[in-house]
Length: 238
Picture 1 (cartoon, rainbow, N blue to C red):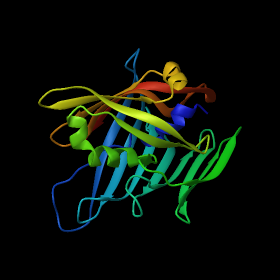
Picture 2: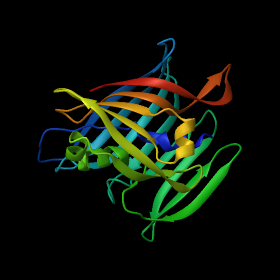
Picture 3: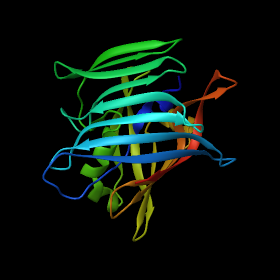
Picture 4: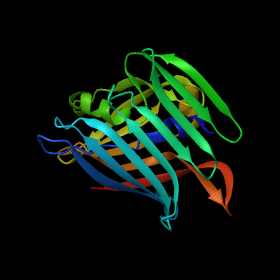
């Protein structure tokens, strides 16, 4: 499986920020992925997020379905220990790919397995370390710096390699309503191999509006795996 694709396992499990409230609450939102060339609908993401009384993430789940609404993958995330390094359980039933990330003795225990490959490691926690949708929590924490045009460097967990890979998040432009950012590997060679991922956020709500780039969802043709991953534009509605 493509390293960057797995890194993206849920950079796109993005923002859902609620108004202040005194009890736990649950919210849903949806992402629709479109082919960049044809604009055809590729798949959908249905997100369910549970917030505590302080509007912090507790738990979230994502259900992936094709254009005919047939579910093919699911993911759950537990943010109770650390917002930037949630525990993860992902399974794509089409290819049998599974990713598990759990906390063990102050470290990150990552296990990846597919039909053709597997990897596992116990990784020591690092500064500016991000796991999966913890990316969104990093965005919230450093939001003011991004609005000032500052670039963020962070370590993202790559489950297929069971290792951390350095990424750079750079603001590109902004107006009164939105901010546009580019996400790319800090490594020069990896940067040459993959186009930057483009992100558009609503400045008033801090919610993702558009994601454009390589996804973690594998292409299937005639019911068979192709080994390639969709490059798509994902539009989010709340």
